Image (cartoon, rainbow, N blue to C red; front, top):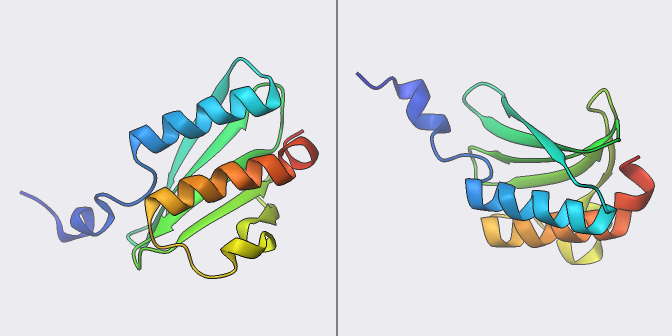
Length: 118
């Protein structure tokens, strides 16, 4: 039997392909050999994923809400946002597709990674 609550979160959050691409990009940009990831399911409304590059306390958080809006942040060790994609002019509007969210994640890593992901 399939529960309605499972249907609401099915397909939310980064795909396995997107996760792999972000991990590879973090390794390349920050010159680390390993990136740990942790999935967060926040009820039925949102699914997120945090990437922790090797040797850092901070991470990169990306999530997708049930309304199909993506958010990308660098976060401190407690998960509190440091920088986000809205600080990059071309992402001032909502991100509603995975391809744009992936590019925004790359841009956040390029712009804030060396400063925030320490």
